[in-house]
Image (cartoon, rainbow, N blue to C red; front, side, top):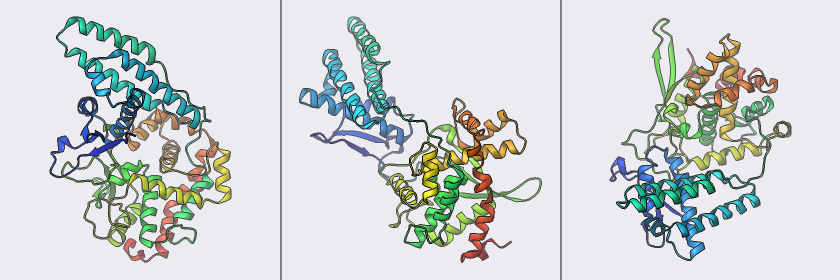
Length: 419
């Protein structure tokens, strides 16, 4: 049995230009040749998390070829331009994914697209390096046939109802009650972890960060300056990639999704004070620069964020669970649900303040780091007209300043905020 192996070259002894995931054949402990070429050429502009997902799919193709012909020879088939066997193995891989999708209901089309794209790109590039005109013509003919056969196909998947991703008001209120570090409903035993998880939820729900963006924030994430006209102190956070000199030992590294995700976003005074106070009182001295860490003092992983929200979901009240079910959702929440909720509410605030819809949508695009071609802002423009969604902050989110001040007055940090 072949086991997938992806090595991450992130040692300080490796030049920054060479630090990236590498797909390895475990049988001979060497990088898979054409997968490595593809990663260096086609994968160079991808976020590390995206590159890893595509390499997982490509490795699944390597394993499928090995299962079908009895040996791990996809690299040789590509080098020999053996289209007869490549086409046979590709058909087997397509059938394998289709069966998997039929049994589990999972959407495997991204894996198929990544694997097929790898083959198409690699074979096309290899044909262009040939010195024989006839070989080039034959290769292009085979590639055209593969495209006709597979480019419009996607493995079958079960249709699922479209879920409204913004959380109902009762669920948002329940999350506040659960995640309050002083709450008897808080499921986390260690007090430091209670405050860490509270700060994480605040960053996702109030600032609309992706979980990877939150895990990349440095300990000094909160920046401040004076308004040029009023002289008021203003706070913000920078969402940006890690400096090339920063070593991140996490196996699945958080990353910035696209260049449009690099941005500055304003932070309310109360939230800035909470984060700064967490850094001073609860983060402790760490050997890394990241704001959020685990109990062992290491940077928190993407996987552990999911575990935190699993624990919060288990504490949801029956009323909150039913509200999720009524909105065609599973009775649980994820980190990304908070980002979606924040987007709906931010748009509501923009529109309620008199900003026209088109301008509000562009404000939304800048705040959440969506590319100019992204349709996500328009998605939330439609959600604005759903009364049960626009009521979210009217019932819960708009009271966050009062709630945080109340929390502040009950905590040992009260002197920190006094003005």
